[in-house]
Length: 222
Image (tube, rainbow, N blue to C red):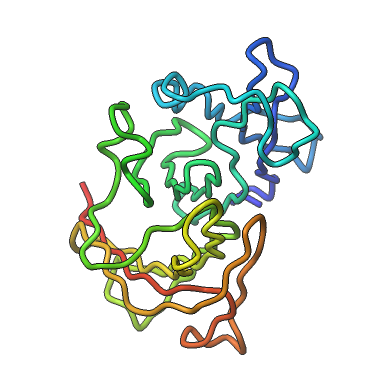
């Protein structure tokens, strides 16, 4: 829910002339029942979508023919400042969007930047510092504030499926901040699920997670 108690959720537009599985963000008013569209990712990422190829099937359902599942958002995480985090499975990207309910704009992205190479959005990727693998087909990203961290930093937890990539790739936790444009790897586990998954802290402790890889990331604000 947002600050007004309305429900903000992911939705999918399917019956389109271009056969795209078009990810949307909508808001459901808990007082009136009205529905408002906040984001159409086909519009927000129009340049990237134009670079993609229509494979002819929905990769999440082999029986669904002629679907163009070019982004496949599987998680939304609202933040107190009006921004939101999204997990895009098909691009193996974590996306932060500012001003979600008023003027949605792309803030940053995490993941393998080569997937977005040549697009208008490619410059939004954070810089990785360290030798650690990128996420692949991740699910269930979760924002966690921690008073022990420096001001402006926070954790992102995720289930990193490594879908469609090498078995040697691992899972991750991400530490975000506003200090420097860096991503630093700190710990990995060895468990992989290829299609779906989730992650949850054990007894409230950050040091022990099931199915989670720990990555640190920090970023300088504008």
